[in-house]
Length: 74
Image (tube, rainbow, N blue to C red):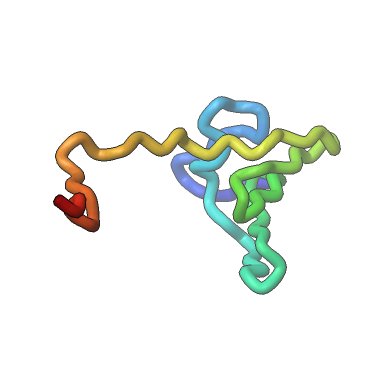
């Protein structure tokens, strides 16, 4: 499928999300990558063979230097 140089990663490579988008449907929440992967806004994926990849959002880690928004009442 991919005609880019250098070629985009395969649909089954670990870095498959690095492939270039060829179709966008932001109103529906998905993009089609040149390797045939459908990438959803929630980070889920649909591979060309029909297998689904569950959403894999990164874990949110609170900032250690964050201060409380409100000071405690004395």
